[in-house]
Image 1 (cartoon, rainbow, N blue to C red):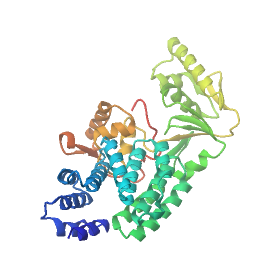
Image 2: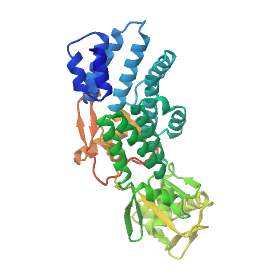
Image 3: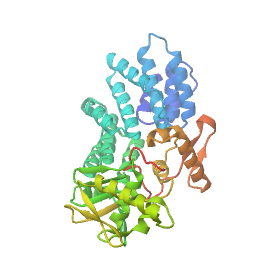
Length: 403
């Protein structure tokens, strides 16, 4: 019965698994029941059962205990508990590999990889992905490998690579014959067809897909990227993520290009001043000087009779790339747009913000009816239904000051 339940779970049939072990309390049955409850979405019950199973297995059953740790890590990831101890997962992975259970060891690696992607550590995720060989793994893990490759490529704005990886994931998902896995790949493919940003400036304001952003990034245009808070042209990138005033000035100049922007308008945008008095004008000159120094590899800033104008060195076009929805707490909404339930601690970790700032943002969004809380205390989670055309988290930087 244990073997039959395990095979049912591997095939994505949690009800069939529960029918075989629902009334048993031995460690193996507890573990299988926990995995089944996780597949059914009851993460609280799943955590409890897996914890009981891990404790019930003796010290001599190292492989079984390690498998429980991996299952607990997967439940934590699914419930967006990103603060779970990664050292325990690494130790479990090493134990499984040393005992010849390479399939579950690889699965542990993919769990850690997905966590790294969620918290924005893409270079570490890519290094881990490169060390995993899916060729000898079951179809389900081959699909997981391709999905991870697609997500990393998406975050790096490589739409062609992402689509190729998703095609491989779909092929593997069909071989695995697991409906939930196919649905996950289909959802990821659908996201690539949704707008991820807007091109704004002058009278233009149009949404663009990731493919369009990729083409834009490889063009010779000067791009002021309000999604990741930088200014770039080809391979030259000037990061202004930690200098919000300079970025605000750069965006104002870019959106007015090839025209200039008055000093009054710049003061209002950058300092929220109502009138450009002498103190504001002096501060504006200082900040324009700093921006001019930062953008020296890409463009100059010239004074005009009315204000200032952006003058690219080589680019023939200046483009401003903005988020789909721009509001005070848009970055939090963008992260919640995946439809999953997030804790405040997980959101803070993923967005590199303080937990208190995230709590304030969520409370404000809840008052506006844009998010909702489920549960109480430490089990409280925040979520919002996915909205078609809403800003995705694909292009979010690791840190957005001021949100």
